[in-house]
Length: 270
Image (cartoon, rainbow, N blue to C red; front, side):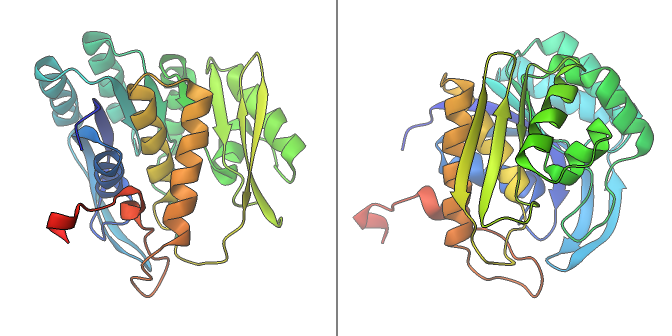
């Protein structure tokens, strides 16, 4: 497999390997993309929950972004956990220097086990300044509720929340509907020109750790290759659904998904 393009991932580390930068690198690599990283935090966690979070100094995050990008310019950027306003300010400063236009933001706020990962001040700054810099935001329903201030119980609520988020300066919103109680999962893509509802069969499993990280990185990976954004969302959702369906059943809690589902090994490697 030849490398198709390059992305920079700005996110936290997950010691269990199922989410965060570990999941991001696996996703990009399995889709043929070269992944660079700027680590924002080191978490101590496993499939049952998060034990601790240690922040990387904001200036070092800035240095990781700028120093890497000045040598190897990424075709797109994926942003994950930014848990303090100091970090967001440094990321914004870095963006003003490297001038990358294709930016996908996964607003990571709460871990799968329920642990809070982002401060209230960071959320406020994200809405005020960072949203204006990104191409697409990919919140799940709890995150969309926090950001929009709305309660979401239906597809119509998801669309209403997406439109409210666009008023903050985001041109495109993909709200992930996995938290809705329904037989199918509805992920809804919204911008000023169109609304697209992606319908997927719900897979009955507890092994969904890292799905949000994986989806946003998959979208960024396809987007970095020049595909239209709506098509990137469609392909990313298909990749994640396949990864959930073939999950390896690792760990005692919310286990990881199978990032390798896109890879077929050549015979000489078998």
